[in-house]
Amino acid sequence: MRHYNLTFKVIVVFMFLWLLIAILAKAKWYLGPASFQGTARAVGEKLFTSYVYPFEVVAILLLAAMVGAIYMAKKEVLK
Image 1 (tube, rainbow, N blue to C red):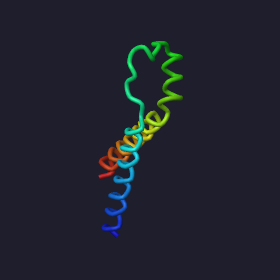
Image 2: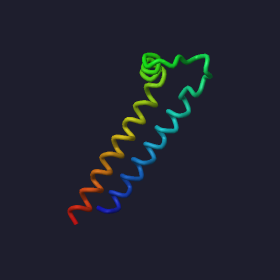
Image 3: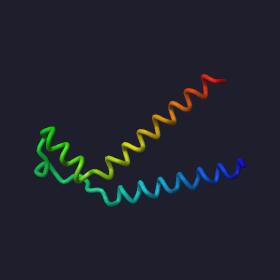
């Protein structure tokens, strides 16, 4: 049973890393100051149109970090 858990975890980590690398490879990087207007509306439009996939990946990563932190904190309290 323990070996199965380790195998599953390794597979999940490699799948996550593959997805992260694939998204980062296709992401549009810095285009220069001429392509950006500094208003809140412009930031929102860029974030939810051109950068929606990296934004979603960061959101999922932060959610996983929060869940992991809560799990680790509760585990220590129960001991």
